[in-house]
Image (cartoon, rainbow, N blue to C red; front, side):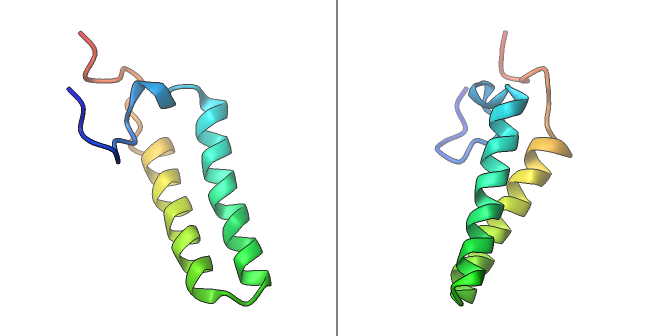
Length: 68
């Protein structure tokens, strides 16, 4: 059963390299925005990176849960 467009526990995100890349891209973009002085966007992308890091590495369910 799909939980919508913000389902970060999706089986499509199971490969570790993909999860690492997504988190790294968010945090790297936050650093770029901060270096350009765009504090608001740095906070937005930093928060997204932190949330995804929490979801991908702290509460991640390697079994997928929804699979039969």
